[in-house]
Image (tube, rainbow over all chains, first blue to last red; front, side, top):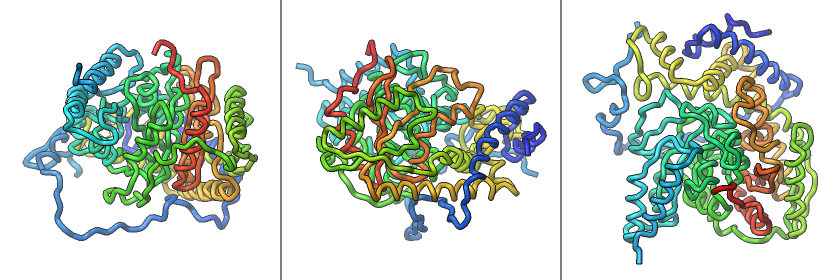
Length: 94
Length: 462
């Protein structure tokens, strides 16, 4: 199934990136050639093969539930473009 | 007699950088660098890297020093903490020169996608230095630092090492802490050393390797890599994976790599052809996994806590989408969107899960190969540095350049790239790949090769 400009618009909305018309058209064409290349994997039988999410055996890493040093509020807010009363200030959600 | 040896030398390095056309750095830290050098001169600062200049890739967090990841979206971001690897550098007395240029969010093979302009290859200013750690590679080759840190997600240390004629190591996954490394694809990436010779690269690895409780993927593993800088490959068996040669590989590269294998053979190593049968699927599997992880990792760039925030706030979705449209370059958008698509309902099994299964097969290929050989030798890149702009309008053709580097990241094993010849004036690199945590083996092989050959050269005019 080929990716249309409409599909690109939908993915852009899911990924929260605005694209202009020229970009949408370019991406549709590029996505099709990249996804066509990925089709190569369809030819490989992976039945019964376990997926590898991580190459090392990942275990939960626990620590004691103790208060330790953390970033002071002032430091944490230093890079925030907009903040108010010690909070990050975001746009309206509802 | 001058008592300010290090300080003077650091002054000279900054002079060189000031007059350079390479664009290897995004941000310099001259004042602190000179302060550290003076501290070493005065005997107040010591350590294994005392007074040595080290450049740090711009996706590695540095306290109080601008960290942009080569992206507009992080313009103005000054981290309040040091990455673990940076803390270790400082602890050993390193003189940190600054932050090196890179493909935006480490997504690229050429350093052309940086918001801060492309870095040039010191061997040929019309060509790319490789990527994504192209600034680090060019800075090392162009004498703008003694050594540098890069990150390698799909070849991003080894590719610029190969294109710039220097040494680069991609450590075993889990050997080096990723705390403070701005993530692109966290199940694949490792911080790695770059230097003009294997000894310096091993020294830098000694300093940055080791368990860090702040990174849950960090593996406790003790080794001293500089102990393995020996001139001896007698009795080793080198595997030559046939899938890394042939179609798509430049003849001069193929010849230089075979010459390297023959050199090691003369020095007492055996060699035999081996097969890693799933190699041809690695590129697709790598890009699917990396894009999926990227789409999730880069969701944090929303202009809220740090970075770019422009215009008037509208509703959340519109504001977020506009900031990301302005802040991210095209390759980053492409990868985030393809990752979003591959993870979306109905496609998860076809792309992401399938790629993870292919990854298992690739890892098993390596495990099987290392039952019969000590180390693998292969081209790092299928061809020497390409021209700036050559792959500009065709992202897939750029991805193809990573064909020999990505399998290593999928499997998690270590690899070192060292110069092994020239195509005209452009350097060629050979990579020696080892089994899990067998950095000692690849360092020993690379060091022996380097000691017995003469490919460690400076670019013309440097």
